[in-house]
Length: 166
Image (cartoon, rainbow, N blue to C red):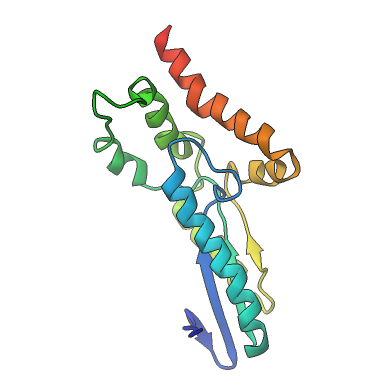
């Protein structure tokens, strides 16, 4: 496998990738995005092993809610065809889309400083997480998987749908 270092200084080399906390706890209406982030997580774990004999540090950054315009830019493009089996869930889809920006997200500049400060340490952490909502992932990893998935469906799928149908 070919490895291209994303940062190099003297004899020190570093690869860092960013995912989000969703690969561990996928959410309704976010399947493709969560799958792509799970792939980033997996390739980073593989690179960590393969880069160890080359003395290359590999860091996975997995933040929670960070301030961005992604949701605002996508909201106007989200829609479902009238014949969709999920037409009753459009409010749930929009709620999920805007969730990370509605929960006091970490300012991007603060996020950038924390990431840079972490990866530039003499011995950077293999895994970094920060920002609001990131703690839930740690909790969810310890709970029964089926229970977590049902909870996420109830809160992010069926819950918003029922709220709008009242």
